[in-house]
Length: 577
Image (cartoon, rainbow, N blue to C red; front, side, top):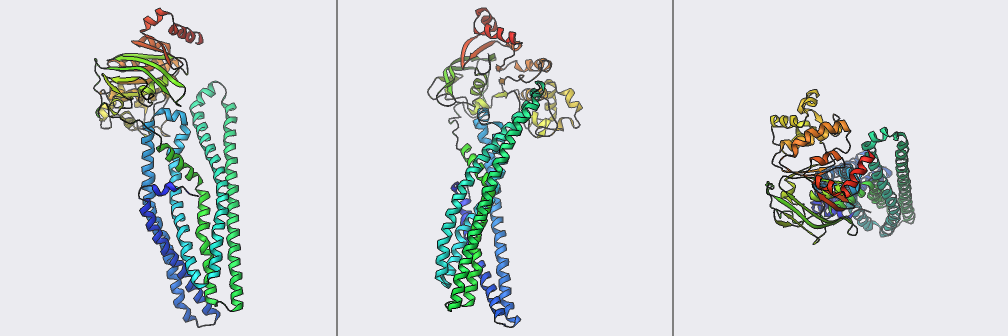
């Protein structure tokens, strides 16, 4: 009913020991509370003087206060561990996402990744805070109470011992039903998140095509499906709560009947009978509390499983084959890929027999129809994807490497995708992403080279204006200029990877942006994936891709004269325009 991996988290075993000790003490407080309350009630029943019940009532109050303080202490012990664990987990998830690269995000879905990395960690925090204490209480406190009841009267203790696992088995059955419903609900939540993100991204295109209202029905159906899944989980939760309350109340009633017969027969005194009756609800209380919180934290359990699954994904090893420092890429440097293959699933090849040679400061264009493998190749060059083991060779400056997920290589390039990521920070901090120590003067010069000066002058706080993630809106063209400003600011990175940077821009914005991009390409090794023909004339060399293969390569003039795949692709694009 809970994930055993919880107790494998750092510091959790030691904390579990302390929580167990405190649970034993809490159980003793519960016994003392029940005993002294029963003493006071029996004294009143026998018409003793009021001053004779002052002492047991004070001791009862002391035990009650001690019980509540123990709850506070357990929460205070638990919270720092949970806070540290969730913080470490969030950092591990972000580091893992960086190691897995954009291919994992594309495969899993942006909404799913956001749900796991942000809301998922919050749900895990709630799950840890609620479940660990409740599980330990359920495993310790009932035994402490049961042992004491057994000293008073073994028959009732035997009945309580027999009924407890039966209730747990019944709750496990309902728990599995709730888990199945919650799993479907969580999948529906992830699906809804992906739809929401995709809808926001594609809203301008949908409006231009007049499909926004039609697509609204799709969004409604997804959200309605999630609502129905949520209601199914709530129904199971309500049923299990009712069943648990019913069986525990019935069990307490049976104990009361046994005690009543014992009082009539004279086989038990009023005081021990009353103590057992008062303790019976507390015997079942940890189970009831755990069951209530279990349903409230099912999404946290699913999120915890997803996080553990993500963290267990394999990542490239041997990342220091080129050293730890960034490469000093020069005019005589070279990169060679020979017969390199890549597959997403280990079966069908997404990239086949790649043979690429890049020298010094060369501009290499990558063109092809949609789905031809341009983005996959860029991700492979960026080290976000690793080729098949022992299938082809990759060499940087004559040194063979297993893959390009090398620390030195990845610290030597800029990656500029279709939608550059902007952080919730100032414009200056976003530009200085690769150079966080840069001064405002250098940042301003980089922004000027990227054509951002006029826009910055309209901002209320200039370079100190907050942008990204819900702050001031930034257009697609401005986002690309911010990405270019990052490149202008850090001149030490001599390799540029462009993945269709102008794919979502209109012609006018792209024409303006092109004048900014061209100076950046000087004195750099450039891999420029695009489907816009006017970029090809700016390239020194062109790779033509089709179904994951490089079917032609050469200079634009050579390919035009060859009258092959390049010419056919060019004619198709012109015809489409």
